[in-house]
Amino acid sequence: MPLVHIVLFEFKPSVERAVIQDVCKNVLALKQNCVHPSSKQPYILDITGGRDNSPEGHQGAFSHGFVSHFANEEDRRYYLEEDPAHKAFVKTLDGIIQNIRIVDYESGVF
Image (cartoon, rainbow, N blue to C red):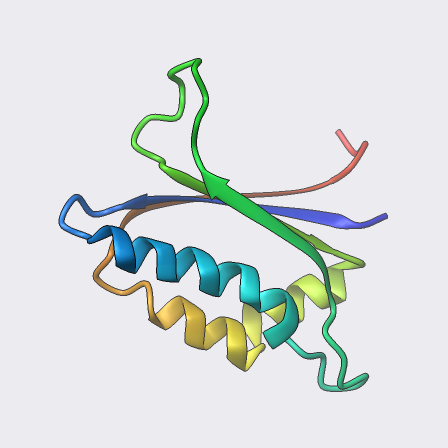
């Protein structure tokens, strides 16, 4: 069963819109840029995301959210702990992220 990885970003108030748009573009590009060392193929099944537009008012200061899907725990582990493209992306967030929330789950497992 695929694993779902949800990331919510709260950017610092001083971060310019162009920088935020670049971050968003780079998150979505991870689907192509993250290549598994064994298969030499992209291994993220899907990534979607965008700017919050919920009318409910429960998002706090989180303005952008992204959802990634991984085929298994090993692929997620590689992504989080070893993938050079993901590590390089995370470094680009230094100084611009005020808060982040991450939730992972396996669909139907409670």
